[in-house]
Length: 103
Image (cartoon, rainbow, N blue to C red):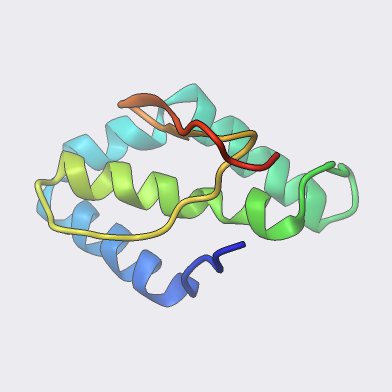
């Protein structure tokens, strides 16, 4: 299992994307999946929800959001994203499938 990057770089790219393309950044934040994810992790953090996936998978979705924000702002950004059953959803861009991944 590959470790996901620390959030520092991810937060920096989110800030930069917002500064470079504020309208696109706002568009990304309004995507229903982004709001749903944020509400879910906040409920998990506060004890109101419990997931089946390891915590780093749930919280690591911020990397997928940062990847989308960077792409929408035309910024170069390389990161690792969490997979669920060989899939990753990149908001505004769709689902990517990777064959042969462990659940």
